[in-house]
Amino acid sequence: MTFTYDSSAIDTTTSAGRRNAVRFLVGDTDSTDAQVQDDEIAFVLTESSDNVYEAGAYCCRAIAAKYSRRVDTEL
Image (cartoon, rainbow, N blue to C red; front, side, top):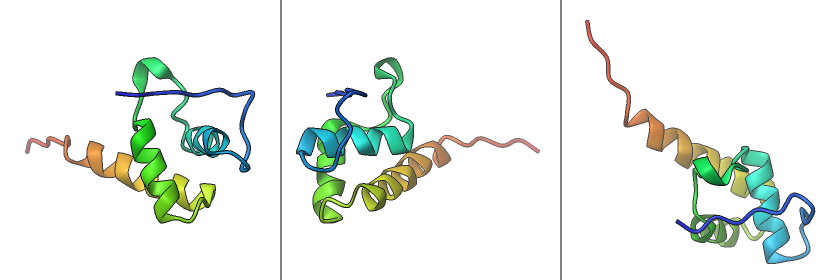
């Protein structure tokens, strides 16, 4: 899993800055507990025309879907 994050380079003018912004908005800033890969963020940024807020929301839904599959209930 490729994970990169630089809190000193959060912006919307470069691809790395947008990736950092999405990670910041999603809360995925811990490399030891990465939730999405850099390639996945690049994909959602492309799909959202580089809108970091839309991409962040997309990533949040994907993370929620991933964990919702792990739910186990007993009655």
